Length: 462
Image (cartoon, rainbow, N blue to C red; front, side, top):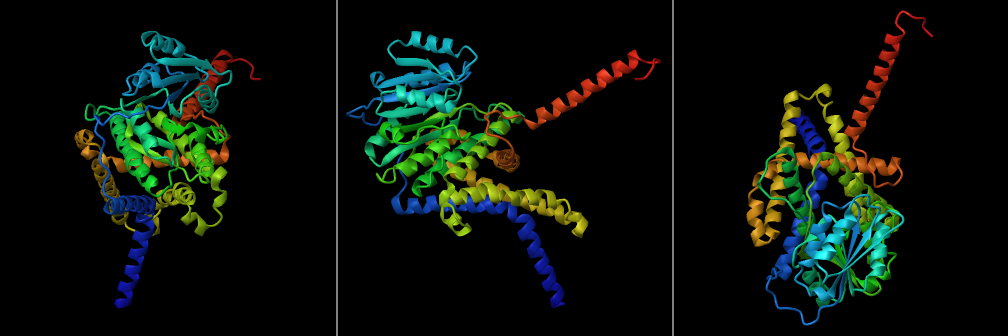
C-alpha cells in the first residue's frame, strides 16, 4: 500500500513539476527577484520621493539638443515637435534637429508648419541620402550643439517636465553618462472595450511593469539592458566617445547601451533611468503591428547579446552575468514553453485522464493570474498618484494578461527563429498576410487554369 502511494506521489510530483511549473519558471522567478530587490532596497534606503511639478527652478540651464529621426511621420511629427516646444525649459536653451530618414510622405511640410508657427524655437531639418535610423541619429548628434543630447522618436511626445527632469538628474549626478526616461502608452483608460482596446490595456501594464518596475530594479543592480530609442538622453562627451549608433543589429539602442557601459567603466560612470521624466508612445493599432514590434525587439536583443556576449563563457558564468541571465530567460528557457505547449496535448494519449490535463491548464491559468495580480499591484504601487486612479479602472485586466503574455511569447519566439534563418532587416512580414497571399496566389492559378480549360473545351489537349 505504501509503495503504491509512493509511486503515485512521485508521478504526481513529476507531472506538476514538468508540465505545470516549467512554464512558470522564468516568469515567476524573474518577477520575484525584481519585486524582492525593490522591497529590500526601499527597506534599506527608503522610498524615493516624487518631485513636485512646482519644484525650485535650476540656477543654470545647460543647452540641450533634441534629435528627432523622421520616417513617414506625417501623422505624429507635429505632436512630437509641439511637445518639445511646450517644455518647462528655457526656449533659448533648446534646439530641435530633425533628420529625414527616407520619408516618402509630407513630413517636411509638417515640419515647415511647426517652424512657421514657432519662429522663436531653434529648429533645423536635414535629409540623408541613404535611409537608416542609425545614420539619421548620428547625423543629428553631430549637427547638435547641446551639452546634453536627447533622442526622441517622431511618434513620441514628451511630458512638459521631461527635459527639466532629466537635466536635473544629470546635473545632480556626475556619474550618470546616459539615461532613459519612463515610456508610457498614450491611451485613454476605460474608454473602449474592443479587442484592440484590451490589447492596449495589456500594453499599458506591460510598459509600466517594464519601465517603472524593471528599469527601476536594473538601475539598482547596475544591469540596465537598453536605453530606449524612443526617449533617451546622453552627455555629449560620453556619446562621442562611443561607437555611436550602428546598423549591425535591428536594435541600435541596445547596441549603443552596451558600448557606453563598456566605454564609461574607466571613468566610473554608468547608465541609468530617470523615471519622473515621462514620454508617451502611440498604442498598438493591430496585431500585425504588435507582431512586427516584438519580433524586432527579440531579434535585436539576441543580435546585441551575440556581439557583446564575449564575457559569457559558461553556464555558471551566464548565471552571474546579467547579459547571460537575459539570454537564458529570453532564449534558452523559451524552448521549455515551446515543448510544454506541443507535448501537453499528448498527455491524454500516454495515460493521463482528460480531466487531469484540463485541471492542470486551469491551475496554470490561476497561477498566471496570481502572478499578474502581483505585477498589477506593483505597477499601482509605483505609479504617480494621479495615474493610480486611471490604472484602477482596469484592475480586471489581470484576467486577460496571461493570454496576452502567451500571445507575445509566440511573437518573440518568431524573433528567435528569424535571427537564425533570415538576414537582418527592419521589414517584418505578418504570417497571416503571407498565408492569405499564398491562398490568393493559388486562387489566381486555379482561375487561370479554369479559364484555359473552358476556352479549349472540346479542343485538342496539348
